[in-house]
Amino acid sequence: MLTQATLDDPGKTTSATEAPPKAVALISGGLDSMLAARAVMEQGVHVEGLNFFTGFCVEGHTHAIRNKDRDRPKRNNALWVAEQLGIRLHFVDVVEEYKDIVINPRHGYGANLNPCLDCKSFMVGRAHQWMQEYGFDFIITGEVVGQRPMSQRKDTMPVVVRESGAGDRLLRPLCAKHLPETLPEREGWVRRDRLFDFHGRSRKPQMALAARFGFSDYAQPAGGCCFLTNRQYTEKLKDLWASRGARDYELDDIMLLKVGRHLRPRPHFKLIIAREDGENQFLSGYRRQFTHIRTMSHGGPLTLVDGDVDEDDLLLAARVTARYSQGREADNVDVEVTVRGSEPRMVSVVPLAAEDIPAAWHI
Amino acid sequence: MPVIRVQDKVSHLAPGDVLEVLCTDPGTRSDIPAWCRINGHRVLDIAESDGELVLTVEVGAGSAPGTPYD
Image (cartoon, rainbow over all chains, first blue to last red):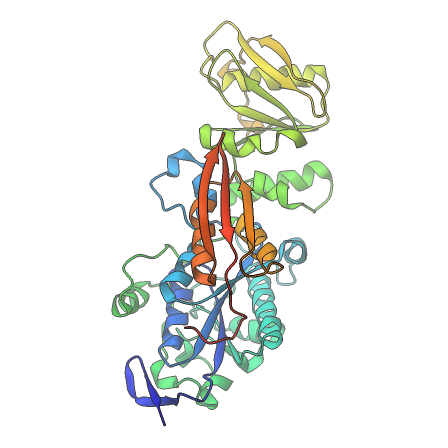
């Protein structure tokens, strides 16, 4: 019978006619999930990736919006990792389901609005559903015990096992030796002695393993893939909820929180002001949905006006917009004001002085 | 997000069908070709006009989850 040796374990063979066990790996695009998947692939397991789109992901396309980030790779790191590993990657849109995780986290928030423990349980739970639907055998994550203050602690990692419903079909290859034996280990699908005992916040073991696998390019750092861990971002989300009197959001709301200067000159309206051409381009995709202002006599930003405004509000918004244009020192700046659903009109305004924009307006 | 929309559209198309993708997200210039390479589809063309990207994708045979890799 033909046999196939696994990559670096000549002693372990898999019958060519026997289907290998199948694992679904949560692929964030960071180094840890990449290493975890690769470590299991090395043991002859068929691995495919899952990536969840929550709307809060920090990814290459977000960087691509801004010209200042033009030196950074314009790529979705999860896709890039999958390609490096040679595995399929399946995207799952969880925007609607994820709202409940953000708004009502059972285990609360971390330092900002990051519901990390609920989030991990949710994602592993969805991976478990996917695993059952497609006939896979177990789930892989890149978690490391002690690495994250909320979801990756010795006492919280069992919570994910329990609340996700995955039970002992959840394998964390990078720290498996610190955790109870799982089904894939008991069944001999993977060998425990070829798994790892990483722990804590040091990245050195991961970097050493990356070198061993020949990975020289990978996204950094771990844990930085979600805007909900970002203080500035979560301040904007809190402002959004406060201004609407409800803790809710739509996808466009949270996408727009990632872009531009956000100023709230009055309680009933907010300005989203592009900081450069890349953001102008991105915000221009929202022109039909918002009242908007752009400078015409000078180079400058596109501003979206979020809220119901009257003529005085529009004049103030136009003067703020002019302040952030190349005409900030000019006597007058011509701006085009387009109230949503109406024809554009030209207005000439005096740019607001810097000292007339209170720090409290900045969200 | 555009790559997810493409994934969903392609799942309802047959091999040989051609999908035209219009988007403004500059990241799609790399994301959609990468997704196509991974999943056995082909980008026939990428054009840009007035800041809008137009990608032409030919649907390949694809592979159901769990099927062995080539």
